[in-house]
Image (spheres, rainbow, N blue to C red):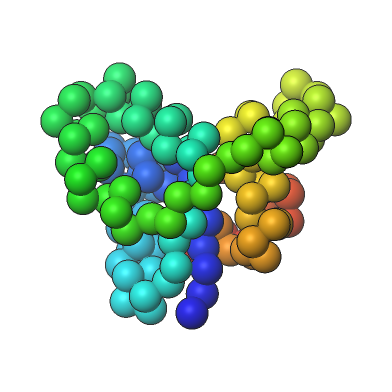
Length: 133
């Protein structure tokens, strides 16, 4: 079974029909479902998703995301150690580097030996992760 880390950029691409990556995200997600891939995400990514979905799409979409999509994910809760390691990545990368949320995802993905990501954020590729679809 393939393990894939899910990023906010992919979630929004799936949910927003006008997103430039929407069609690609739908195809990639269908393939992930077909292959019964294990889908991981972080607690930080969920917080980011909830905030952006609520703001950009609305409360009904937030409720559907929580009840229909989140149960498909294995959530890894970011602890103090992962948080500090993510901050180290952010500080070392400078202004053009990844966000704290993305850096925490990098730390968790490496800890769980995840190489593939469902993401449309270039920081993941720059960090050495292989995007799906």
